[in-house]
Length: 314
Image 1 (cartoon, rainbow, N blue to C red):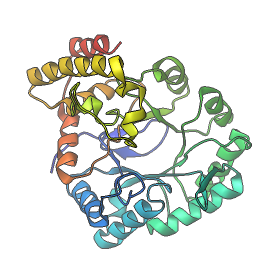
Image 2: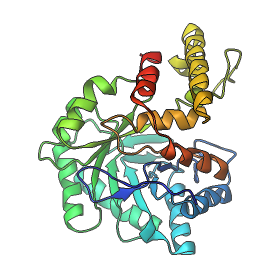
Image 3: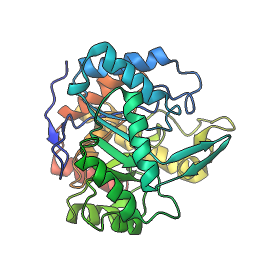
Image 4: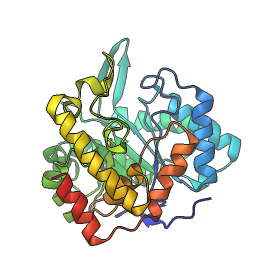
């Protein structure tokens, strides 16, 4: 087992391994059509064995299936008490259409439904996954405060909110965690969200830390993505921007080689040096990827190394 330091997610009593696990590949056939449920179970088993104790899931991962498989693993291993579990809700499936709902009644029912799928009587961190257009955000968060007071959830999060929506959601000071897009190629959060979360003692948890594999060093400038692939529509993968990003990653590979670490590990270690960030939640499709990601927690970066990476991607 990789032994890593623990961190406390600020403004909560949640103590976790700083290298968490994003579980959208666990039961996530919506995103990864070829992945099998047993592969997801094996990922979770490895995470338990290796002390990776902060798991992030959502209703829409599957849909529902990721939460169900996590519940199966809790029953199989009797290790629920060792895991700090985050989940999210906001999506309403209506045939092939998806609606977003933040109403207090919806959120309270969504938590009850998630508890049933997860086979647990509490959720450590519950997020409003996306904002809707109608519900006042402080009312939505107020519903989660009721659930927290009732012991059904331990901490309150919001995800994909704009800064103004976050400010409205946190009107009463109840928000503990904000989850948003942030990586070395997409750093807007440093300008708008980080100052607010730092000043209000809210932990920022980034998603897409590897920018669909680009920051993991998987590709070169000749890589072509098939039509329909999510990367084929991302601006960071287009034309000159893609070539420029590949060149930056090549420089990152040199820095990683100098430290005798892998590029993804270096990237994760850099995120953990940011004052706004307590923990990261990279996904994994294999047990090997879990082991590789966990090594990032043992990497110490000097101020000079942090600044070098900062300049490279600024």
